[in-house]
Amino acid sequence: MKALVLAGGAGTRLRPITYSFAKQLVPVANKPVLFYGLEAIAAAGITEVGIVVGDTADEIKDAVGDGSAFGLDVVYIHQDAPRGLAHAVLIAADFLGDDDFVMYLGDNFIVGGVTLLVEEFRRTRPDAQILLTKVSDPGSFGVAELDAGGRVVRLEEKPDEPKSDLALVGVYMFAAAVHEAVRAIGPSRRGELEITDALQWLIDAGRDVRSTTVTGYWKDTGNVADMLEVNRAVLESTEPYAAGTVDDASEIVGRVRLEPGSVVERSRIVGPVVIGRDARVADSYVGPFTSIDDACSVTDSEIEFSIVLRDASIRGVGRIEKSLIGRGAEVTPAPHVPKAHVLVLGDHSRVQISSARGEV
Image 1 (tube, rainbow, N blue to C red):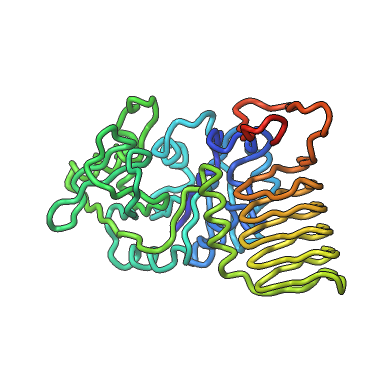
Image 2 (cartoon, rainbow, N blue to C red; image 1 turned 135 degrees about the horizontal axis):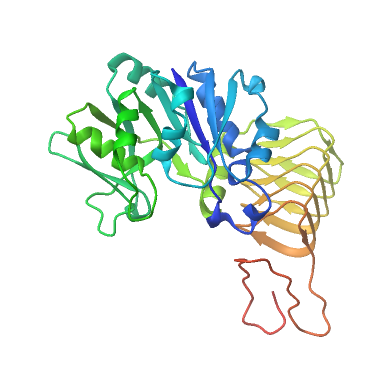
């Protein structure tokens, strides 16, 4: 059995962060979200992996390499533009051959991995196995409609009027029959080859398409709110680790991971928290569910339930919550005089400014 991992796409919902690097490499608990998927694939006993890449191919290749760090043998398949999940299967046909395969969206996160699901597929051998979960906003996903017996009867991509609240999770398992399906369908109203249409083709052709409802934790990390939630979920299982330096004036409470070279001075850290290599926290408070990446600096500030990416600096800004701070970003106080907002914002940036004049 092989794996096809999708790591293309522009990551528009995570802009401006994804203007500078791939959305699949945004870290969760200081590890790229893509790596969790690759580790889950390796844990399921799959070693041959094709990674579909687009404009951020060089970054993905630099991060993953030949896959040996994960116990995998990785090849890369270039997709010239985001043309749909079924198109990814279409262009990967030579790599996949007639083998069964798992298709895994590289920005998805499933607690517990996919080992049991892969084992079930290997045992039952349907033409396709999809994962479903109940969501509050099904119109944002592929949606499945089941009959009274629980069999999949209809699938639709991002419908205006969803027939159920069951969304497709970004992990699919296929036998070779899917290749005929992706060749048979045409572009959707979005101009893409939808995997939901390929699955519907299999259903209409009388093929065996089964579903499993996932009750555990799953997230599509396509936006900041979901990234923070996944970060929280991963940090829940953090084990204390003290490879950094903590002075006598500091207090470490709960499950805190201090990577080698990290320094904590005159500060209070309340876990679960992870602080990366060569990061420095001084005269500050770092609260639960916060990830501070390598070589960051937090000084005279408070931060909680946030993700801070590599080389970022936060100094003297009071309290920060529910934030995603990009690589090399600098967060500093606004000047007291004159009382005005001075902003340099990239495309699609978001800024929240207090109604009180001169306060941010």
